[in-house]
Amino acid sequence: MTMLARILALMLLAGSALAEVPAELDLDILDAPTVAATTPAPQTDGAADSGAATLVPLPDTLRERLQTGSAGDWSAVAGETLQQTLQRWADSAGWQLIWAARPETNLVLDVDLDYPAGTTMQEAIRTTFKALSRRPAAPKACEYRNKTLRIVNLGDRCD
Image 1 (cartoon, rainbow, N blue to C red):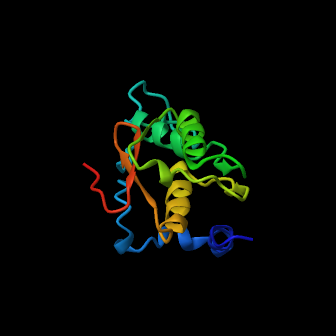
Image 2 (image 1 turned 30 degrees about the vertical axis):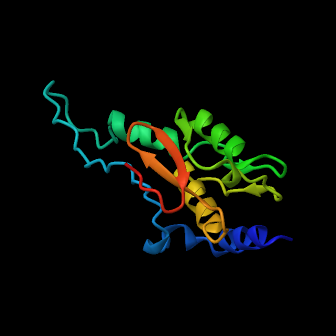
């Protein structure tokens, strides 16, 4: 088992490691905007409250955030390059991938990875890049609000 496989396996077993990305890694991944909760407008048709729950449609921004992040196959297949994996993830989530890093950062994965159900694409990216950050030619992920994932060299700025 390679060092990358060991690191990723430990991170997957840790479970909560997704939320603990050290600041010095400078991943520059922006969180999706938060959505304030809204309450439904009172009924004006004079109908009495029957005590039944009323379905309120989700705000478009929240629905989009849930659709882009929670449903999907965030897995990596041994033999695939990092760029191929990220392109598949981006296509699945309706994002655009821009590879602006040196070619040597596009490593071939030597282990299969399956992130647990409920893992968002952003969490899968953070976990993967956290594990890769210790490599000599490590890439860095920059996520933008316009659904663009840009891969740059570690040390480069995300603009």
